[in-house]
Image 1 (cartoon, rainbow, N blue to C red):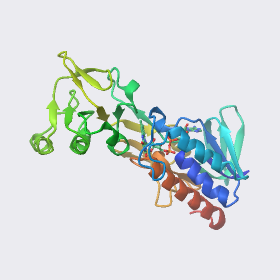
Image 2: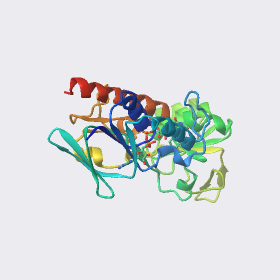
Image 3: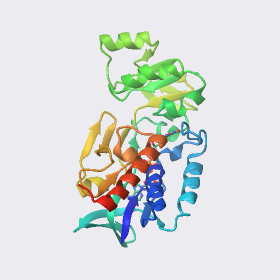
Image 4: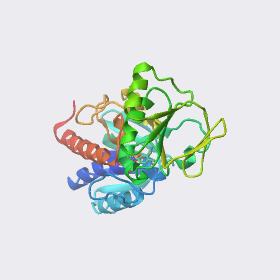
Length: 295
Ligand SMILES: Cc1cc2nc3c(=O)[nH]c(=O)nc-3n(C[C@H](O)[C@H](O)[C@H](O)COP(=O)(O)OP(=O)(O)OC[C@H]3O[C@@H](n4cnc5c(N)ncnc54)[C@H](O)[C@@H]3O)c2cc1C
């Protein structure tokens, strides 16, 4: 019996396991290795690791984590989890079952992109959702926002900080008078012609045959939890304009006793820094529960 099983061994999950390993608690980390930022060559904005490859940051963290003798690493998916009496049972894809006193869910989220040919192939390379992560490198070149609904107003007003911006409405919504004024004030160009394809580095090809060459294109992906485990355990799910996430309190406890959640899975919008911070908090919170019990 483990003290804690951590499902998801990326930034959030490893940060949680590190705290628990340092308290000499028995922890198992289950991981399928599909970090959300695996499409990008470099990760930006994490203090002390800015510009490093995502796999290098995670690889370094894993190497340090596995020096703690009470931490076990298992490559593979958790396919189901349930509470059996006071403990949790987690079934692995190979059929093995592990049990623990507490569960930490750190499975991250999946990004759904609008169905535009050429968009998905450029995700993390010249198509992004987060200007704080990748805007600086675009070097104040021409930028675009591909609208997926009114949510894209936020992007369209923000992105001019990083370069002259065109909002491609693509039939997703029509800005009202006030929104048009806001866009004008921020110097955003509006393109109403439908987008047929993304070509070259970040060329937006329109149905009328024109192609607008950009340094980078931003799009608000819709996020859903990477796995249905939290929902199956009965954890309360919340919805933000960007998608679904697991609801937690300030100590990263979900609505189900003994189940904590952290990282992108448990916040409306995330990045590596927040995932690490949330993971550390979840690890600490789980450790407190092992000693003092949980509500
Ligand atoms: C294209 C792109 C670029 C980005 N660039 C940056 C950047 O430059 N800087 C930055 O700060 N943030 C960036 N982000 C955001 C960053 O990727 C996330 O905030 C961060 O990865 C969240 O960490 P996490 O640990 O919560 O989840 P993730 O890193 O997504 O990890 C979840 C882990 O859980 C595993 N998993 C899922 N289901 C199971 C299961 N059933 N069993 C076992 N394991 C499972 C997955 O394989 C994965 O390893 C970027 C995101 C994208 C999409």
